[in-house]
Structures are given as structure tokens and as C-alpha cells.
Amino acid sequence: MRLYINLDHVATVREARRTDEPDPVRAAVLAELGGAHGITVHLREDRRHIQERDTLLLLQTVRTGVNLELAMEEGILGFALEHKPMQATLVPERREEITTEGGLDISDRERQERASNALGRLRQAGIRSSLFIDPQEAIVQMARELGADAIELHTGEYANARPAERAEQLERLRRAAALGRSVGLAVHAGHGLTYENVRPVAAIKEVEELNIGHSVVSRAVLVGMERAVREMLALAQAAPGTADD
View 1 (cartoon, one colour):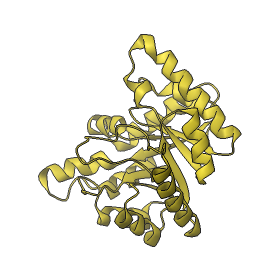
View 2 (cartoon, helix red, strand yellow):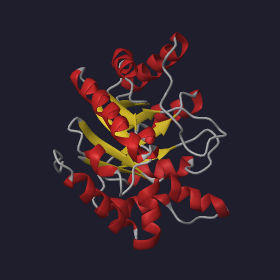
View 3 (cartoon, one colour):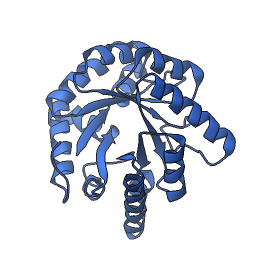
View 4 (cartoon, helix red, strand yellow):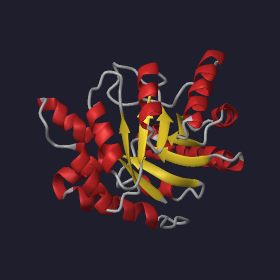
């Protein structure tokens, strides 16, 4: 099980005061020292947290790998094609949302064509691609047809479910993950995962990578980034069926 740490909210704290700290690049160094297998950042169109400078420095200094989340917007896509992160994850984006609220909508022909175009350009540039999608089997199949290398299953509905409904949401994730693996996709998962709810998702045998941000950054405020990452990694890799990659 790989653990990627999303550092967007380190930059959120910095941007609240329009200053130069805390620095996501320094946070990335500490996250890697804590055992993170990679770093995730979302370069949004409105630049509300991560900036181009952050991303460029991370690409130069991160020793594991950078997963760049981006909307299918030409300026951001062009940035990725020019600077070549290890992986690019296409995500939905609305300026009025606080954080990404759901998976990428690839339900109609226009969106499918846009996604296929973006994925093809990433492939030509040698960038591994992923689609952030809801755990719906039809969407998983479509992701494969569009040419993605991987899918990241949106775990928000699982994370936000009431206790009585959580088993149902977990089963949705299991089915989507199994289908994804069966059609040749690498399967990742993330959104809303915490120290309290991560283990059942980590135990899904087809899930090979977790992307977790807010919960780790929140804990890092209290105990430090290295320890926060180490504790999350221990939980994820202690889940039945997982192994240390």
C-alpha cells in the first residue's frame, strides 16, 4: 500500500495570511521522512492554495514522486505537459466549492471527448494518468475505454456516511475497485479519509494507493508532519490484505 500525502492545506494556511509560511516544499521533505511514497498537490485555476512556484519546486525536490491534480483546463493542462509530473490526476473543479465534492463527470459525449483528449496528450508526454471518479461501475469501465492508466475512487460518500450506511458505501468501493483491477486499471482511493476510517478502505485488496491530505495536515499541526505521516502509514499498512510497497 502506497501513501501519498496531499499538501494543499499546508498552502491554505499560508495563503490565509498571504505570507511565505508554512512552506509546502518543507512539508514535503518531512512527509517523505515520515515514509510517504509520494506527494499530491492540486493546482487550481483560482490558485487558492498551491501556486506554480510550489509545484515547480516540488517537482525539483521531491524524491518519491509528484501526483499533480488538475482540471481539464487548457492552461493547467499545458503546465503539466511542460513540466511533466510523475502522475497527473484529472479532477472536477468548481470555484465555489471548498474542496472537491465528487468524481469527474464523464457521463456524456462532450466530457468523454475532453477527457480522452487530455489523457492522450498526457500519454504522449510520458505522464502517467489517473481519473478521479465516483465508485460507479459504468464510470470505471468508461475510464478504461478513455485510456486512463489508473483511477482514484472518490471515498467521500463512504467517509461522510452514517454508521448504518457505511457498509453499503464500502461495498460500492469494493465493487468498483475489483472491476477497475479486472480491466487493467491501477486503483487508488482518496477524499475524506482519516485516522478513524482509513483501515477498511486500505483493506480493499485492489487498492494500491491512498491519497490523504486534510486529516494528516490537521494532525501534523499537533504532532509534527513526520509523526502524522508515520501514524497514518502504520494504520493503512496494518489493514488486512495490505503490504508495505
